Picture 1 (cartoon, rainbow, N blue to C red):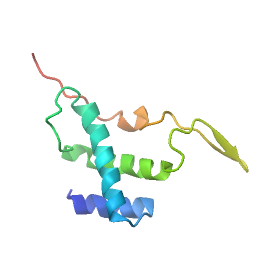
Picture 2: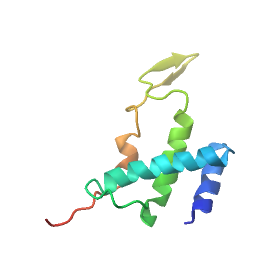
Picture 3: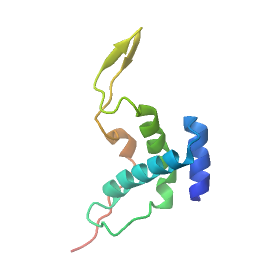
Picture 4: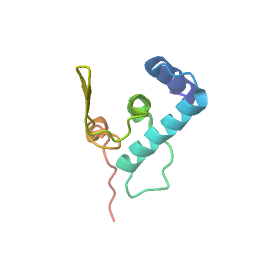
Length: 103
């Protein structure tokens, strides 16, 4: 999947039209995936293709959370919000398998 395809999919999912902002969120999401998948290999800078959809989902999550970062509880007019943590929930990254290698 190309970066422009990721961008178009994220636009459709989030409703956000600012491409610069969307690219920032894709970069942030990619970094979260790389930190989980390659914790001891900082030289890896490209998200593996099998995590492209996860990257888009995480980016969309971060966009939707904008303005309420780190919220641990909120209730208003019958709507309640809570977040698992201040960053990306572990449940979103559960399918990202950390890479291992022999020493």
